[in-house]
Length: 134
Image (tube, rainbow, N blue to C red):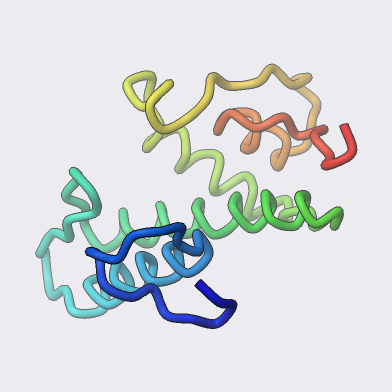
């Protein structure tokens, strides 16, 4: 697949661009979310979520995977402290022991006085001190 190519048919074989897969999946979920009315539920994988739940999970996904990509590119892009605090509270609701190790690595331990971003990343199985040059 060449840069900029669309994903193509599911029956196509060969490597697929993970960034395009993520983009298309996120676009599909966003489209379903926008189309919801009232108390309707949206299917995300094997889960059924309400509109506020989809928004919360989406915010966690975007913030944390954005951190992942920035760090992998050698960029330090800290999350705003208040956002990290809010997302940490939400992550504790959505990521349970049953989610580990299938969807999330075990949590890292960080000092109690560490910033909210470090607690969020550690809770979601990331080492907040990771760099691509480790």
